Image (cartoon, rainbow, N blue to C red):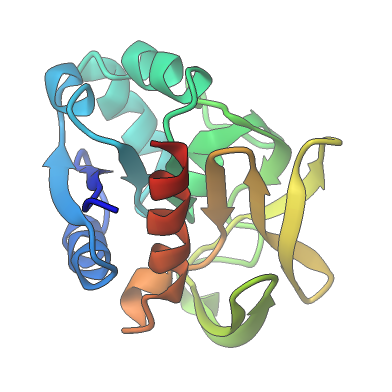
Length: 194
């Protein structure tokens, strides 16, 4: 199978770490800031960062509707932390004017695990992957999922990893650990979709 081209939404957040992790998982990784760059990728990662800022910048850069259209059309997408929030159909506690791309039937809570100084690392058992080191930084959790959404992992009784069709999302940051199995799972999803 040829090497998929996977973009990382490069508006705000830990873009560089995802580019490195995707390259380590045998993908061609490139930053995506404009609709024409989005049109050239086989899959997309929405990184962690600040979900309100990513939402506002996506609107400012004219990316919200193109992102929604591509995700609705089946573009494989992987959101980590703020990216998980961006892929949610509903946010319980949105900031004023905050929008999402949607794509995963789930309701999420922002900063659910606490503020910056309450960030932590924990081993998380991810279905189909095994134990991974989860880095939780002002992390959200998933309050509830729809019938089509598969729960892949929980931590402390809260859902922290989900998948629905071509969309994958984690509350934690696997790109910060040097373990590229979550990215490899996503690369495999992109290959299967093409």
